[in-house]
Image 1 (cartoon, rainbow, N blue to C red):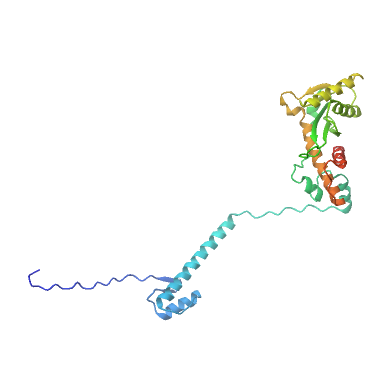
Image 2 (cartoon, one colour):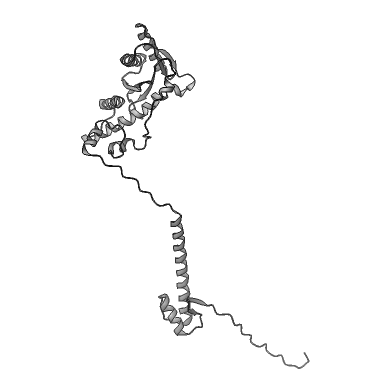
Length: 290
């Protein structure tokens, strides 16, 4: 620059930014500089207000397009989620019984029936598969086996009556004896009565290591010894559950049927059976008979 030359102002530089384009549908695209008519057509197409300046109409169209895009994504995600879900499978409705079938079933509630409200109310969650004996395996034993186990007639109730469940393994005949006093004599007498009613001769008596039950088995042996009918004693040493597993399984079955009988009685009479009532003991004994 030579001395004395005037400083010229820098020329204004106009930055032309590309207008943002918004495609409304396949033959309608708008920008913020589009004509008012075109912008109004776009607003009319999107169902938004046509008032205001070009910029306001354009912004309104842009917002409507974004909202529509989000809605489309949500709907797409929902459809994808539905496509991944398994179709609901309805529970088959059990065949409804005749009045006679229902009356006969309600005499015993055995076996479990899905159409019986008392069966469903009392033991619908239990495993209803029938248990079958294993004659081949049991025939290998030299003598018949009697298994026994204690259980409470009202689980979780203070002062509940204790019962002795006794089962003949070969025949699966089972009985329940309520014991007002749990001692060697009451348990032993229950064993004597059960064995005398079904078997003669020598047999095995299997039980766990509970002291009262051990003493009761010894009492039973001494009583039968007077008649020269001495059972072999087989206490469940070492926690061998196989020696009393059948008795334990029958305890569960008896409790389930007992609960069904009590449920039926309470519903028919519209009363609540109080704790310790004799009908609770009857229900357990009748369940064993059933």
